[in-house]
Length: 130
Image 1 (tube, helix red, strand yellow):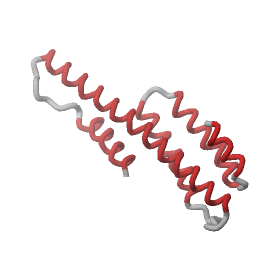
Image 2: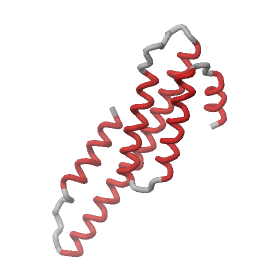
Image 3: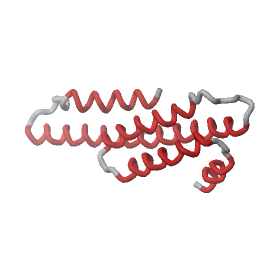
Image 4: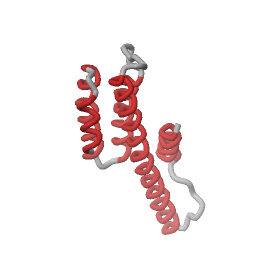
């Protein structure tokens, strides 16, 4: 975290500094909620903020501040994607394990979980991988 803070201090851009606070607040919320679907919704909001920085209309390719902003934002986006994807896989596997155990206890071996929740998790995983 120290490296990111040092990099943040070196980015002399008002837009970046304002967005940084918003991004930090969203990130803090992601880490406080326990339900993975809530995290996924917050992640989408976080992505919107990060994409806003990546598509900045004032971007100058030769400006070191812009280069550092894009680097920091891209790394942050990648990190967030990896964390939530891991949590989605875990949630998906727990759901399937629970469903399998429930069906075995009831004597139904080959039933599939309710399609909507399972499909939502799969779609989120695919979306985050792209």
